[in-house]
Length: 326
Ligand code: AQP
Image 1: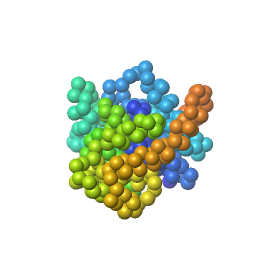
Image 2: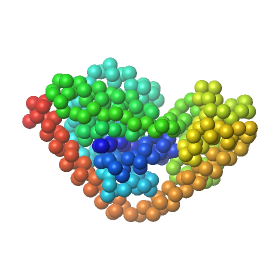
Image 3: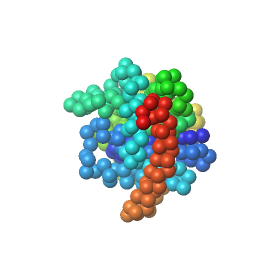
């Protein structure tokens, strides 16, 4: 199967990004044709530091490698280096109903957060994402729950194009993890954990030190009751901690609930801290190995770009022809 997914080079990756996206990618890489992209053109739709963007891209590439992606098997590349993404996004704009874009949850959330910068790029973000996906005849897009709506829209746009210009695009499907598709903020467990949340305590970054992890989990919001039970509506904080424990341990929720039954909230937090620290330790270690290997990282990105471009150019040739563009 052809698999495509990406992560924006914004902020520090957190355990939500890992469980929602990267962990699934690792499972796919052995038996499928995978493209994993660093989607820098998406990252610039919100205020960002232009001087730091390149550094952020290198950082994310290191994370992909440290997590265990094998550049011999998968294509790792930077979105802006393959110009066909923006060309196709423009063309797809012409078949995208405006109403669909206005109803996207992420647009509404981000526009609200960035009142002074409510730009057209933010609105058109899902069209660019549709281009990223459709350009490679992607069948499956492994993402967290928050991106599901965008993948659905990519399908709608692809279908509309096919109906208008003839069969051209494969219609993609999203693949959510069976559990951990939405890790919530530690400070406000009704909101998803997010890289751009100004409250650092709200997320556990993949490279937080054991001390930082312990501190953040200790201060995680729970509730005033005493029972440990999975109930997303009534006990969002406890449910989030149980989820984190479950995804790191690989144990089913019923088993985790049984294990934690009768324990104090402090004991639950200690257990979550312990398993999180132990599970993230290999990331910290492997990341060190890739530091100061800039030439190697750039080589991987160059190779990835070349392989992605070959596929993208062929598809764009077909698209231009269908649309009557020379
Ligand atoms: N809290 C989450 N739980 C599970 N999966 C998540 N993802 C994001 N947050 C969670 C998944 O991570 C992948 C990469 O996300 P992205 O870089 O495209 O940006 P995002 O979805 O907008 O995630 P963030 O962390 O909230 O970033 P910012 O703050 O920069 O917008 C996606 O597959 C996403 O589903």
